[in-house]
Image (cartoon, rainbow, N blue to C red; front, side, top):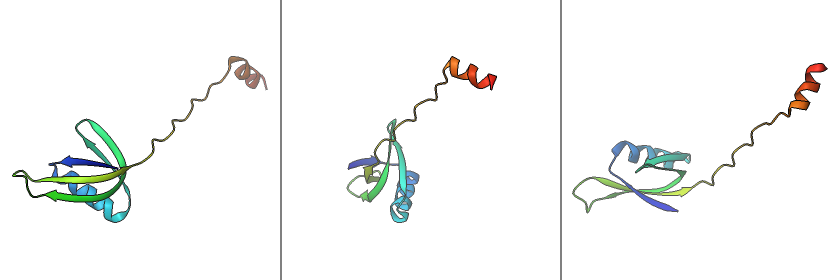
Length: 81
């Protein structure tokens, strides 16, 4: 579980909508991208600048698909058939 901080109102709204709809959200903050379920969106009222603290449970990374490798001898035998 990670807590990220943002001053972007659009990002906070998007996170709040994802939280209530139960969907995964993708947040890109500070050049880092986090995808997962949003658990909480809290406004930090102690700050002079409006900012939000977003708690997100990151999804497990998806395994990348292995590329299909065609051997030259298999391609030649398929072409002959």
